[in-house]
Length: 85
Image 1 (cartoon, helix red, strand yellow):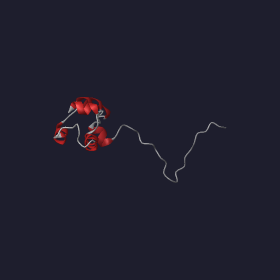
Image 2 (cartoon, rainbow, N blue to C red; image 1 turned 45 degrees about the vertical axis):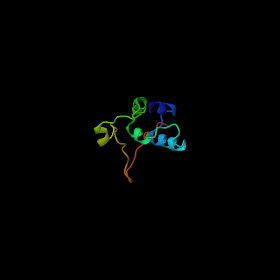
Image 3 (cartoon, rainbow, N blue to C red; image 1 turned 180 degrees about the horizontal axis):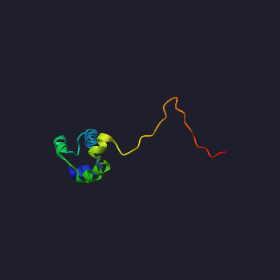
Image 4 (cartoon, rainbow, N blue to C red; image 1 turned 135 degrees about the vertical axis):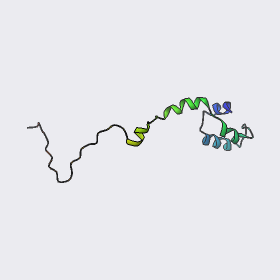
């Protein structure tokens, strides 16, 4: 299973099923779908899993530390400091 996965360039499970069907299952084991459900590629686990950024529970609940911008309400008087004079 690992050899097939390497041969086709480490596709995702859904893409691997598409490849198998496009090849009319030639060159694939007869129980390919059952094997695919249990198969875990160690290379993909290292490389593709590293892309996800682990967010903490606090950030998921409350968001990152950012101070909200103060937007004046309609009708407020806004003074601008200008040095163009």
